[in-house]
Image 1 (cartoon, rainbow, N blue to C red):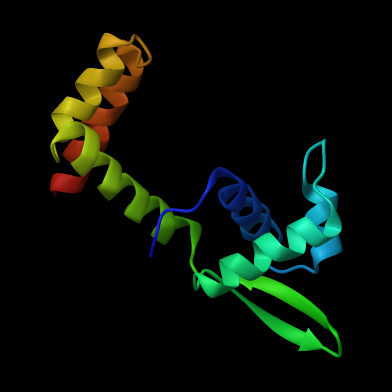
Image 2 (cartoon, rainbow, N blue to C red; image 1 turned 180 degrees about the vertical axis):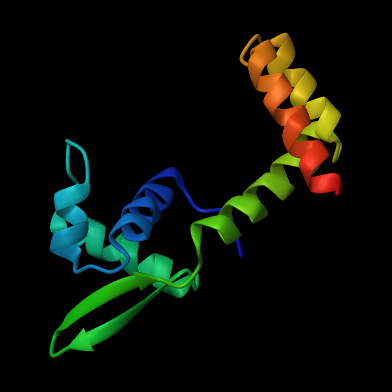
Length: 120
């Protein structure tokens, strides 16, 4: 599975939320400025070609649904991010957020608690 563009990810988030939808359903969930119907339709077809979206045909209309779960995509994305930017090191990842002051002591304690629970 390849990394999606920002716009493709935006569409996937909508489909994960809706679980299935026609182009108009997806368009209704998009923030302003909304893309043109044909542009959105093209992007959804690209997602289909990438194998992350499929559809059920109703005559000439297609109802699209995600084939890849958010969890599967997130896992792939995080593995890639860990490899590219953090040398496959969870401690490097946590260190990045701690140095940037984006993780509070409370959150660090929660992370440690989760790690301890999963060791058992």
